[in-house]
Image 1: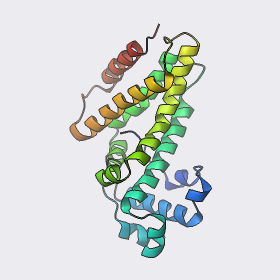
Image 2: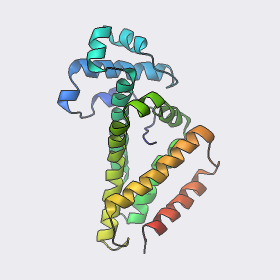
Image 3: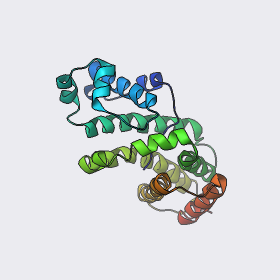
Length: 212
């Protein structure tokens, strides 16, 4: 699993760009209320009735936009993915050596496991009902991260830092690796040495991508 930004003010989410047809003002109001509910609970739980109360929305209005709680979780995950994608783009310098860009990408994602607030958010988005009911939609959202990683890999192949290959395919495999680490880490924990883990994974990814 991915996602997962640091704790931030709800207003930061309100400035995110969305597809207008999927984000009318009523939908946005419900999602903003849902984020407030989540932050009050420290991302431990989310109940539809709490969202209805916080947004002053009737159940009929809510379910016209979100047929189930899983659909609400998916919309919140989209908020999260786009926020993290934007933050990563702010951190990664496309003019830097590709090995450095890859380390920044890995450091931010793996760093999730060593930040309690981010772990709580990540655990929330491992919601099994959402994963079972909407697997294709969840996979499409994670594709946003793979696309950004593919851009880094493509730059490395273009300038000769990485061996020629399939940027999208290679990024997908690295994405699977990191999401596996995140899922395992959230559920079972990871080694206490964050820098050592990042260095080990970074070296492995560079070897896999044929870094010269």
